[in-house]
Each structure stands twice: as structure tokens, then as C-alpha cells.
Image 1 (cartoon, rainbow, N blue to C red):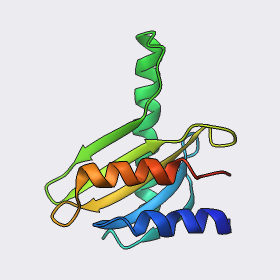
Image 2 (cartoon, rainbow, N blue to C red; image 1 turned 180 degrees about the vertical axis):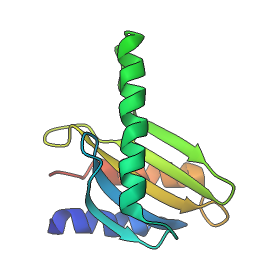
Image 3 (cartoon, helix red, strand yellow; image 1 turned 90 degrees about the horizontal axis):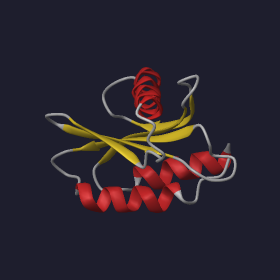
Length: 122
């Protein structure tokens, strides 16, 4: 789990990041989390796993032969980014990143999130 803690630290180093978690899509449980977004990250992780599962079901029903890269949820004061992990040992996991909308640069945060996501191995 030390490697996952390092990933969380890297995510929280992104300008404007308030919270981050690595989440199992099927169970909704956070394998690692950190930060202080102002709400319970474990509850948010579980809720966002429902979002990812719903999108995967919809893609299957539409017979789309594609993969989810990320999902952006824009709130009045925050951005919530969900990045679905790919690769050996990462199938079925996603990164959940909470950004302060005032202090974050969304384009740069997405770029850095992708870079961090490519380093994750469970």
C-alpha cells in the first residue's frame, strides 16, 4: 500500500487538489485516499463507482467498443475528475480527484492526472 500512498501524495501535489482516492469500481471501496475536500471521501468513492458502473452499462447497451478515459463533474466550487485506470493489475480501478475550481487549472490537472495514472500498479 506504500506505493498507493505515494500515488495519493502525487495527486494531492496537483495545484488545487483537495482530495484523492483510488477506488475499486465493483465494490466502491477506496484502496487509498487522502486530502481534505470537505466531505467523506469514502462515501464519494462509493457514489462515484455507481457513476462509472452506470456508464459502462450504457456503453455495453449501445455496443460501443471503447473505453472510458475520464469523467468530469463540474460543481459550483469544485471539479471532480474520475480517471479509469488501465493496464496490468489496474483493471476495475479508478482515480477520483477533487479540485478547487478557483485555484486549479483544469487542463493542467487533467494532464498531470493522466501522468500519475500511468504510474499506478496494484
